[in-house]
Length: 175
Image 1 (spheres, rainbow, N blue to C red):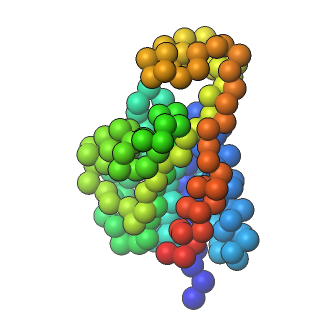
Image 2 (tube, helix red, strand yellow; image 1 turned 135 degrees about the vertical axis):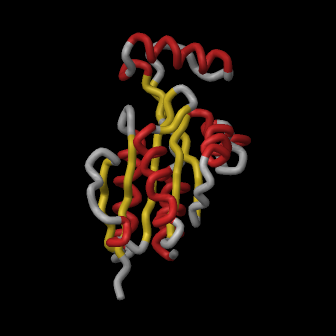
């Protein structure tokens, strides 16, 4: 029987969707069926899928509220199938904070809910000050200043490790 996977995501600036598109490509290269949904448009039954991957970006230290609500509302069903979770955040740009068990936002996320996905990881996101609204840019610059990151308003750096994204997707394919 062929497996069917759903990939649900929430993104703010588009990097989580870009990561999802890479995951979809890996699944297709491995001839594994996958459906991509933003969390707002997912209206299927979880039981229609053998695997569910959930990806969420972070803003100001918090994962997407709809992702959190979805997990809380469907935890019992999620626990009956193979699941994977990934977080996208700029803190993961630091080598000592780029794993699920060392990233403070992922640790906090899983302390607040008792969902235990089959796999979990974290990917560094993208810093693009020109893309942000004024308030967000100032806040992110302040956070980056505090964490010794780049603060120049013209900075655009993609921190995502695409080899790590591909390896994660290949592992989930094999679940």
